[in-house]
Picture (cartoon, rainbow, N blue to C red):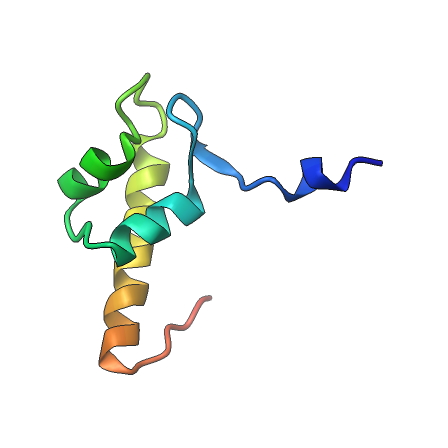
Length: 77
């Protein structure tokens, strides 16, 4: 069985190959607006069908970063 195939990160943007981890790294790297995220990752610039999922991931990662900077822990329901 090929375990590496199961360990590949889930791509939110298939056209540009952008994963959730890529979005998290871009946010930590200074992408504090969605426009900056798109400029860094090129997510949503292909077919655009991933827009909602990428935007939601961006918002969540931005909130996690803000909470971490404020010394708060985020709760996930």
